[in-house]
Length: 317
Image (tube, rainbow, N blue to C red):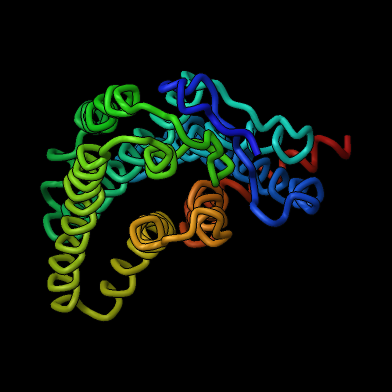
């Protein structure tokens, strides 16, 4: 076990152990994980391609979906290549600055995705509760500004993170219990008071994830109130436009909240559960979101089938 000597207060690198207790099986487990990663990238690129090339899909809901797909690719790519290097080549070392970059990328991209999911909920609220105002409220230039706001918000919330980590002295073990760098994992290695980091983490979770999930819930309560006053046919159509987004919300927030709770209350650093949940949190949403939108959204499904048939027809000739 590699440890940092107590005479060296600053860490220059960390050790990522991958899946604790499953080191011998990691090589083989990497194959399904790599397959899921490739499915995630291909699925989200397909969504982006379809929306970009089909002018009939240049509407706020689908533009937000493109943003979600792009963020899903970036989130999974921020961790999976290093994870594959650990599992296949035993490349467990990560430099301190590289760890900070990965940590900032993962957390800021997660904040951006939460903001986009909130924007999608607002889009559904305006479309169902105020349909006559939808075209004027959510114009494409305004949607682009919302996308930029999501990027700025996610980056701004995480801007203090490198500063709060760099101020900490590391004089204990430099072994991280995950397959990638997480704030909760890194700060526990510090040999100093980490209350500032804990408070900062709570503020970020409450102001981003907590606030966003609350506003999304409020949006759907208002949508439900409006839909219950419609005809049965109109109700089915309204619910049909919301199902995919509701699934995406649950796919994103449930693993995130579960992982936060496990980190908050777990006492054992060598437990396998937080590691598995962390991998699920970064990989499952990018894999499932294109599938959910491809199956549940008629317009996306029709374009995917048309693209598949065109590709098959071209290969036959």
